[in-house]
Image (cartoon, rainbow, N blue to C red; front, side, top):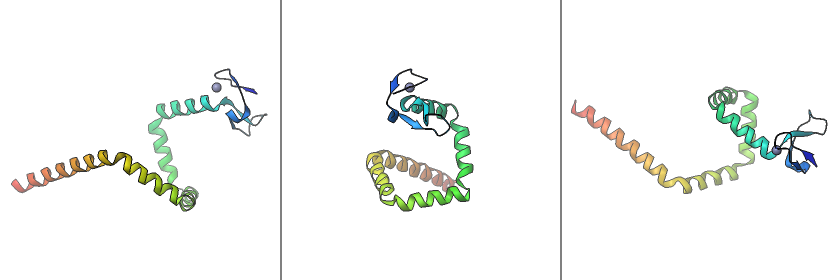
Length: 113
Ligand SMILES: [Zn+2]
């Protein structure tokens, strides 16, 4: 059993992420606390993290890793998009209709002038 330095609760080793820099090979924070911390950090630094991630996405080794991941998980990714589409179909259609309506209004305005 390992005690989390954040919540102070003793938990099984499987409740901790691996960390090779630690003597016991485990993170000091349990998975629950680590996830909460990670979410809070993302919320606080969202813009910087997006810029950082975008800047790295064009690096050759990052591109190669992404390509390998897509090739290996093609089915899973396609299923994810299918499910997403089914879940968000109404929202997506409403958004598209609003966009097309605005576009029509803008082009009609040009015709009048
Ligand atoms: Zn904890």
